[in-house]
Length: 248
Image (cartoon, rainbow, N blue to C red; front, side):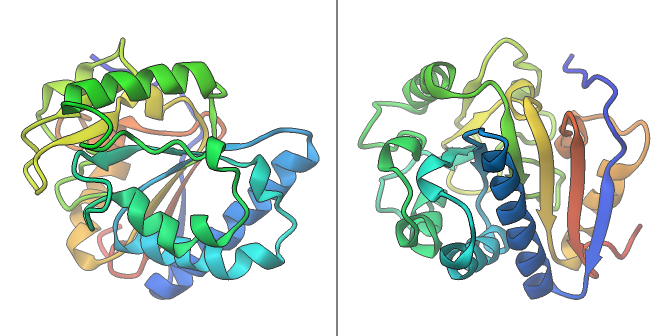
Protein backbone atom coordinates (compact mmCIF):
# COMPACT_ATOMS: atom_id res chain seq x y z
CA UNK A 1 0.00 0.00 0.00
CA UNK A 2 1.23 3.48 -0.84
CA UNK A 3 1.94 5.52 2.28
CA UNK A 4 2.95 9.16 2.45
CA UNK A 5 5.44 10.10 5.21
CA UNK A 6 4.47 12.88 7.62
CA UNK A 7 4.50 16.22 5.84
CA UNK A 8 3.36 19.75 6.66
CA UNK A 9 -0.37 20.24 7.00
CA UNK A 10 -2.02 21.59 3.87
CA UNK A 11 -2.81 25.26 3.49
CA UNK A 12 -6.23 26.19 2.15
CA UNK A 13 -6.81 29.33 0.08
CA UNK A 14 -10.40 30.18 -0.78
CA UNK A 15 -10.84 32.59 -3.68
CA UNK A 16 -13.88 34.51 -4.81
CA UNK A 17 -14.13 32.71 -8.13
CA UNK A 18 -12.15 30.75 -10.71
CA UNK A 19 -10.66 33.88 -12.27
CA UNK A 20 -9.30 35.10 -8.94
CA UNK A 21 -7.96 31.62 -8.21
CA UNK A 22 -6.17 31.46 -11.56
CA UNK A 23 -4.56 34.88 -11.15
CA UNK A 24 -3.37 34.01 -7.64
CA UNK A 25 -1.92 30.62 -8.59
CA UNK A 26 -0.17 32.00 -11.67
CA UNK A 27 1.36 34.86 -9.73
CA UNK A 28 2.51 32.54 -6.97
CA UNK A 29 4.09 30.16 -9.47
CA UNK A 30 6.02 32.99 -11.09
CA UNK A 31 7.31 34.03 -7.66
CA UNK A 32 8.41 30.48 -6.86
CA UNK A 33 10.23 30.16 -10.18
CA UNK A 34 11.96 33.50 -9.70
CA UNK A 35 13.04 32.45 -6.20
CA UNK A 36 14.34 29.07 -7.36
CA UNK A 37 16.35 30.65 -10.16
CA UNK A 38 17.74 33.25 -7.75
CA UNK A 39 19.07 30.30 -5.73
CA UNK A 40 20.83 29.08 -8.87
CA UNK A 41 18.39 26.25 -9.50
CA UNK A 42 16.73 25.15 -12.73
CA UNK A 43 13.19 24.47 -11.48
CA UNK A 44 11.16 21.51 -12.71
CA UNK A 45 7.39 21.91 -12.68
CA UNK A 46 4.55 19.46 -13.23
CA UNK A 47 1.46 20.61 -15.13
CA UNK A 48 -2.08 19.35 -15.19
CA UNK A 49 -5.10 19.71 -17.47
CA UNK A 50 -8.68 20.81 -17.05
CA UNK A 51 -10.57 24.09 -17.21
CA UNK A 52 -9.06 25.70 -14.12
CA UNK A 53 -5.55 24.68 -15.20
CA UNK A 54 -6.22 26.30 -18.58
CA UNK A 55 -7.24 29.50 -16.79
CA UNK A 56 -3.97 29.42 -14.82
CA UNK A 57 -2.00 28.79 -18.01
CA UNK A 58 -3.68 31.74 -19.70
CA UNK A 59 -2.69 33.95 -16.78
CA UNK A 60 0.88 32.69 -17.06
CA UNK A 61 0.83 33.60 -20.74
CA UNK A 62 -0.34 37.09 -19.81
CA UNK A 63 1.95 37.66 -16.82
CA UNK A 64 4.97 35.66 -17.91
CA UNK A 65 6.56 38.13 -20.35
CA UNK A 66 6.66 40.83 -17.64
CA UNK A 67 8.11 38.53 -14.97
CA UNK A 68 11.69 37.97 -13.92
CA UNK A 69 11.57 34.28 -14.83
CA UNK A 70 14.10 32.96 -17.33
CA UNK A 71 11.66 30.63 -19.05
CA UNK A 72 14.46 28.94 -20.98
CA UNK A 73 15.63 27.56 -17.62
CA UNK A 74 12.27 26.08 -16.57
CA UNK A 75 11.75 22.36 -17.15
CA UNK A 76 8.18 21.21 -17.81
CA UNK A 77 6.64 17.79 -17.10
CA UNK A 78 3.11 16.41 -16.94
CA UNK A 79 1.29 14.59 -14.18
CA UNK A 80 -0.82 12.75 -16.74
CA UNK A 81 -1.91 12.81 -20.34
CA UNK A 82 -4.55 11.31 -22.60
CA UNK A 83 -3.12 8.69 -24.98
CA UNK A 84 -4.55 10.14 -28.17
CA UNK A 85 -3.24 11.77 -31.34
CA UNK A 86 -0.89 14.73 -30.77
CA UNK A 87 -3.33 17.18 -32.36
CA UNK A 88 -6.34 15.94 -30.38
CA UNK A 89 -8.22 18.53 -28.37
CA UNK A 90 -8.12 16.02 -25.51
CA UNK A 91 -4.37 16.49 -25.10
CA UNK A 92 -3.47 18.48 -21.99
CA UNK A 93 -0.23 19.53 -23.67
CA UNK A 94 -2.03 21.05 -26.65
CA UNK A 95 -4.06 23.35 -24.43
CA UNK A 96 -1.07 24.38 -22.32
CA UNK A 97 1.07 25.08 -25.35
CA UNK A 98 -1.57 27.34 -26.85
CA UNK A 99 -2.18 29.15 -23.57
CA UNK A 100 1.38 29.87 -22.50
CA UNK A 101 4.21 27.51 -23.45
CA UNK A 102 4.32 28.62 -27.09
CA UNK A 103 3.96 32.25 -26.02
CA UNK A 104 7.01 32.28 -23.75
CA UNK A 105 10.67 31.55 -24.58
CA UNK A 106 10.84 27.99 -23.25
CA UNK A 107 13.67 25.76 -24.43
CA UNK A 108 11.81 23.09 -26.48
CA UNK A 109 14.23 20.44 -25.22
CA UNK A 110 13.06 21.12 -21.67
CA UNK A 111 9.33 20.69 -22.34
CA UNK A 112 8.73 16.97 -21.86
CA UNK A 113 5.37 15.91 -23.31
CA UNK A 114 4.05 12.45 -22.56
CA UNK A 115 4.15 10.38 -25.79
CA UNK A 116 1.06 10.41 -28.00
CA UNK A 117 -0.27 7.73 -30.33
CA UNK A 118 2.15 9.07 -32.95
CA UNK A 119 5.11 8.45 -30.65
CA UNK A 120 4.27 5.11 -29.05
CA UNK A 121 2.46 1.96 -30.14
CA UNK A 122 0.47 1.60 -26.92
CA UNK A 123 -0.25 3.36 -23.65
CA UNK A 124 2.07 0.84 -21.96
CA UNK A 125 4.88 1.83 -24.32
CA UNK A 126 4.19 5.52 -23.70
CA UNK A 127 4.32 5.01 -19.92
CA UNK A 128 7.60 3.12 -20.19
CA UNK A 129 9.11 5.81 -22.41
CA UNK A 130 8.03 8.63 -20.11
CA UNK A 131 9.35 6.78 -17.07
CA UNK A 132 12.74 6.48 -18.78
CA UNK A 133 12.69 10.14 -19.78
CA UNK A 134 11.89 11.31 -16.27
CA UNK A 135 14.60 9.10 -14.80
CA UNK A 136 17.15 10.46 -17.27
CA UNK A 137 16.25 14.14 -17.35
CA UNK A 138 14.28 14.75 -14.16
CA UNK A 139 15.67 16.57 -11.14
CA UNK A 140 14.36 13.96 -8.71
CA UNK A 141 11.93 16.52 -7.32
CA UNK A 142 9.32 18.86 -8.79
CA UNK A 143 9.68 22.39 -7.47
CA UNK A 144 5.93 22.82 -7.96
CA UNK A 145 3.45 20.15 -9.03
CA UNK A 146 0.00 21.39 -9.99
CA UNK A 147 -2.90 18.97 -9.86
CA UNK A 148 -6.60 19.03 -10.51
CA UNK A 149 -9.29 17.05 -8.69
CA UNK A 150 -12.22 15.08 -10.06
CA UNK A 151 -15.64 14.94 -8.39
CA UNK A 152 -14.79 11.31 -7.58
CA UNK A 153 -11.54 12.35 -5.89
CA UNK A 154 -9.24 11.21 -8.69
CA UNK A 155 -5.95 12.98 -9.19
CA UNK A 156 -3.88 12.97 -12.39
CA UNK A 157 -5.34 9.81 -14.00
CA UNK A 158 -5.36 7.76 -10.81
CA UNK A 159 -8.94 6.76 -10.14
CA UNK A 160 -10.64 5.32 -7.03
CA UNK A 161 -10.24 1.58 -6.70
CA UNK A 162 -7.76 1.20 -9.57
CA UNK A 163 -4.75 -1.08 -9.00
CA UNK A 164 -2.40 1.60 -10.34
CA UNK A 165 -2.77 3.35 -6.97
CA UNK A 166 -0.40 0.76 -5.49
CA UNK A 167 2.27 0.96 -8.21
CA UNK A 168 4.98 2.01 -5.76
CA UNK A 169 7.92 0.80 -7.82
CA UNK A 170 7.04 2.61 -11.07
CA UNK A 171 7.29 6.19 -12.29
CA UNK A 172 4.47 6.22 -14.84
CA UNK A 173 1.78 3.68 -15.65
CA UNK A 174 -0.86 3.23 -18.31
CA UNK A 175 -4.62 3.44 -17.83
CA UNK A 176 -6.82 1.63 -20.34
CA UNK A 177 -10.18 1.82 -18.58
CA UNK A 178 -10.55 5.41 -17.44
CA UNK A 179 -14.11 5.97 -16.17
CA UNK A 180 -14.12 9.27 -18.06
CA UNK A 181 -13.16 9.50 -21.73
CA UNK A 182 -10.79 9.03 -23.36
CA UNK A 183 -10.18 5.59 -21.81
CA UNK A 184 -6.45 5.33 -22.52
CA UNK A 185 -4.09 7.52 -20.54
CA UNK A 186 -0.62 7.72 -19.03
CA UNK A 187 -0.18 8.95 -15.48
CA UNK A 188 2.58 9.39 -12.97
CA UNK A 189 2.18 7.13 -9.96
CA UNK A 190 1.52 8.37 -6.44
CA UNK A 191 5.15 7.66 -5.61
CA UNK A 192 6.30 9.93 -8.44
CA UNK A 193 3.75 12.66 -7.69
CA UNK A 194 4.91 12.75 -4.09
CA UNK A 195 8.46 13.58 -5.17
CA UNK A 196 7.51 17.26 -5.10
CA UNK A 197 8.68 20.13 -2.95
CA UNK A 198 5.33 21.87 -3.37
CA UNK A 199 1.99 20.34 -4.40
CA UNK A 200 -0.79 22.68 -5.45
CA UNK A 201 -4.35 21.49 -5.99
CA UNK A 202 -6.34 23.74 -8.34
CA UNK A 203 -10.04 23.13 -7.80
CA UNK A 204 -13.18 25.03 -8.75
CA UNK A 205 -16.87 24.22 -8.79
CA UNK A 206 -19.40 23.07 -6.21
CA UNK A 207 -19.44 19.60 -7.81
CA UNK A 208 -15.93 19.10 -6.37
CA UNK A 209 -16.85 20.19 -2.82
CA UNK A 210 -17.47 16.72 -1.41
CA UNK A 211 -14.23 15.36 -2.87
CA UNK A 212 -12.29 18.32 -1.46
CA UNK A 213 -13.76 17.76 2.00
CA UNK A 214 -12.97 14.05 1.91
CA UNK A 215 -9.44 14.57 0.61
CA UNK A 216 -8.70 16.96 3.46
CA UNK A 217 -10.35 14.87 6.17
CA UNK A 218 -8.13 12.88 8.51
CA UNK A 219 -7.95 9.16 7.84
CA UNK A 220 -9.34 9.19 4.29
CA UNK A 221 -8.23 6.10 2.34
CA UNK A 222 -6.41 7.07 -0.84
CA UNK A 223 -8.00 4.08 -2.56
CA UNK A 224 -11.34 5.86 -2.11
CA UNK A 225 -10.09 9.41 -2.71
CA UNK A 226 -6.72 9.25 -4.51
CA UNK A 227 -6.05 12.95 -3.94
CA UNK A 228 -5.64 12.14 -0.26
CA UNK A 229 -2.45 10.29 -1.20
CA UNK A 230 -0.53 13.29 -2.60
CA UNK A 231 1.27 16.02 -0.68
CA UNK A 232 4.37 18.17 -0.98
CA UNK A 233 7.53 17.59 1.02
CA UNK A 234 7.63 21.26 2.04
CA UNK A 235 4.17 22.54 1.19
CA UNK A 236 0.70 21.57 0.02
CA UNK A 237 -1.73 24.31 -1.01
CA UNK A 238 -5.35 23.88 -2.00
CA UNK A 239 -6.37 26.76 -4.28
CA UNK A 240 -10.17 26.69 -4.08
CA UNK A 241 -13.06 28.84 -5.19
CA UNK A 242 -16.07 29.34 -2.95
CA UNK A 243 -18.00 26.51 -4.56
CA UNK A 244 -15.33 23.85 -4.13
CA UNK A 245 -14.73 25.02 -0.53
CA UNK A 246 -18.41 24.99 0.42
CA UNK A 247 -18.25 21.77 2.46
CA UNK A 248 -15.19 22.66 4.52
